[in-house]
Length: 152
Image (cartoon, rainbow, N blue to C red; front, side, top):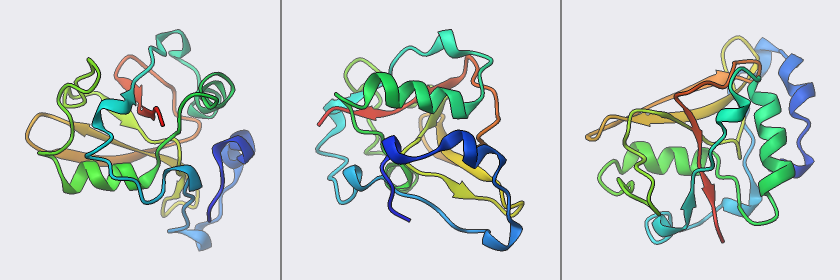
C-alpha cells in the first residue's frame, strides 16, 4: 500500500492486529525509485534523545510534525539498499556514521509481522554487514534508536 507518512494514522496502526494480513506493507511515495548511493550526502539523523521511553508511534508523529516539511522519510526501499549494499552505505554521511551499531529506523514504511501487528523496519550495521529487523509501533524509543531522514 502506498501512503504518505503525513496521511498515516500510526496510533491506530499500533492497535491494529490481524494475523491473516501477514506480509502487508506500506511505502512512502516520496522515496520510491531514488538512487540511494547518489544521495548519501543528503542523509540526516536528528537527535531524538528527548523522546526516549516514548512508543515508536509517538516518535513518528513527532517526525512528521517537525521534519516532514524539509525531509523525506525513507522506508523499506532504503532498508533493502542497506542490507543488499553494505559497502555502499555511508560510514560518514553528513557527519553521521550509519555503521555504528545503532538501530536505524525507516519510518516511511510499516510491515506486518506474522503476529499481524504493524512493525517499523530498521537495520543496524557493525561495519561489515547489516542486520535487518523491525519493532512494533508500541516499542519504546531508546538510546540506541536512530532515524534516517533524507533532504531532497
